[in-house]
Amino acid sequence: MKNGTVPQPYSALAAYGWDSLLDSAFAAHAERGLVPGRVARVDRGLCDVVVPAAADGAHVTHGTQTVRADTEDVFTRDPMRVACTGDWAAVDTAAVTGPAVRALLPRRTTFVRSTSSKRSEGQVLAANVDFAVIAVSIAAELDLGRLERFVSLAWTSGAQPMVVLTKADLVPDTTYLLADARSAAPGVDVRVVSAATGDGVAELAQALSGATSVLLGQSGAGKSTLTNALLGREVQEVQAIRDSDGKGRHTTTTRDLLPLPGGGVVIDTPGLRGVGLWDADAGLTQAFSDIEDLAGRCRFQDCSHSAEPGCAVLAALEDGSLAYRRLDSYRRLLRENAWIASRTDARLRAEMRREWKQRSAAGREMYERKRGGGHRKVY
Ligand SMILES: Nc1nc2c(ncn2[C@@H]2O[C@H](COP(=O)(O)OP(=O)(O)OP(=O)(O)O)[C@@H](O)[C@H]2O)c(=O)[nH]1
Ligand SMILES: [Mg+2]
Ligand SMILES: [Zn+2]
Image (cartoon, rainbow, N blue to C red; front, top):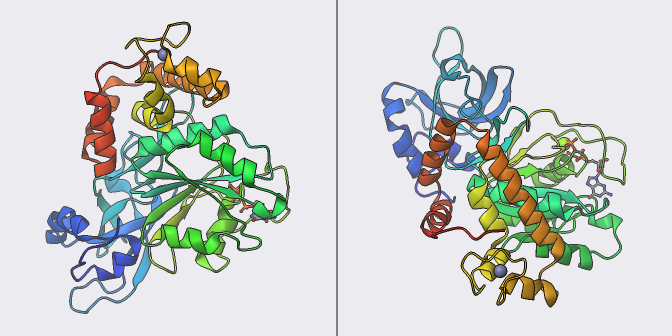
């Protein structure tokens, strides 16, 4: 996440998250005379890539520049493998036809949702993300089920989820909303901000500094306004007319990677009406770790938590420490995930699993726990 020693000539990319591990991953490309860069935006087959400003090796590099590069070389029909904002790329800056992306480096984390429940295709929303920041407007009614869905996908991505309740200035007392959101996201940093008053913004900027973060959430949640607040300048267009119900038209249309003043980057994304689960088995287990813990304490290993004696889940429902809504939400999401999985290309899924294994230490540990965890409890 934080950078180690960054060797020349790529030090200019350190602010964008370049580190010594990437340096080794890039070595073979460097030998071919390619330059590393981070994809800042993808737009109709072309992408904006941030590369070192003076990459000819003759000069000490200072600063970066953004080049518009062709992606034909890395084109694939597999939507999981197309260039995406946050990707690290090997760029040919000397090509006569203009800059071109020749290869993408393996991703550390990948935020994927299923695009349509009919076709069951995965869509990569952001790559190489450390924090998946879920923005939720507290001006609208808090939908805990939706929050749990986002958190499950965030855990699945390999990134650390974070929940940011926005527009705090519109609500007199945020105590209960915060408590509700926390109960729906155990183990997740849940915080309240107001881009309007600046409350919580500096703390959030501090938490995200040096890392790659993606802002996700519904249209009108205030992602772009928050992005601007984090950047300290108006870069992203925001909805001109304020609507307190949190709905609204889609203002942001591309996924944009922007450098933070304190180091690190933030990716602002277009609003998502919904996010379909995508191979979210591991993420679901993590997102509902409280229920998993309870289930582990049931008298019977294959407890269905419906009428069995010694059922810890039923006991928690009884004493109010677990909400019916939350157990129901978990069951629904597990069913949806199983259904999506049954419709997904087996090869693709096997490939995803392989990638999973290569991901961040935290992600790997989680994956192993799941694999080695014996048989799954029945819900
Ligand atoms: N009162 C108040 N309004 C806010 C705050 N943050 C954002 N808004 C308003 O909420 C509306 C939506 O903000 P945007 O930042 O455009 O929302 P978005 O999530 O980027 O929306 P999309 O780009 O469509 O996904 C705008 O009218 C903002 O002015 C806040 O902290 N307080
Ligand atoms: Mg926006
Ligand atoms: Zn039970």
